[in-house]
Length: 287
Image 1 (cartoon, one colour):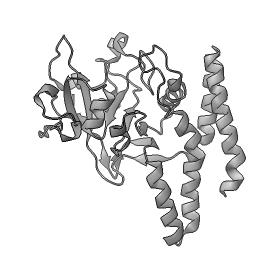
Image 2 (image 1 turned 90 degrees about the vertical axis):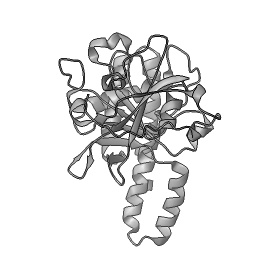
Image 3 (image 1 turned 30 degrees about the horizontal axis):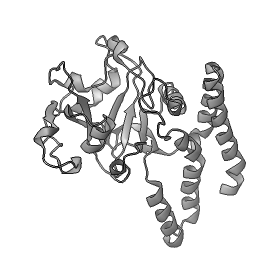
């Protein structure tokens, strides 16, 4: 089964490299067209996950507090409204000028992803995670080393070997795309990151695909504390906006707590995993 798919997997990998060549040579349309063809071809084999499966999770978002403070209200920790798109910079999966909502499954990961601010506000988020009310993601979040041990065990113990092979095929088939979306940035402070080309094209494809709400992914940070934390990120796409510039679906289905301000100078030690970063309040509400 897997052997028969190897030529197709290799061609997908070559096409993703060609996407980068097109883009870096200024052929943006060719890059986008080829990328969308590859993503559509890979779709049946992409790893997918529903929110709340197998466990219900809480998510977090952090915003740095700079010289100009902002009110500690829920809207300030939601995605930047489309009406203020001049404030939106490019991130790994999102392009400049177009809002997305990034969340982390641990407050510590949210802090690292926010470049370790000394002063910040944090809020807890609750997304739909019920059997008949959920969000659907492309999933690049499973730890591959742990997964390799799991497959070894499954092939020994499981009676339905064909199902294990199908699951393994999904991971192998989607790996070139996962790898292309997970490259750490060589120049973190640069104006342009070629490492973001494929993930940004993928999220653009997701935005035009009614089946998915975003991408669940493992952090690409080089920080060892992040690598071994076991947490993951979500990037939620925005599609249809209300009169305030917020995504209608996200605004109507995601609740969050009131933001709480922190200053790390008030914490003891240098390990954020020992800091009381998780707000105790559970005053979830819509923005």
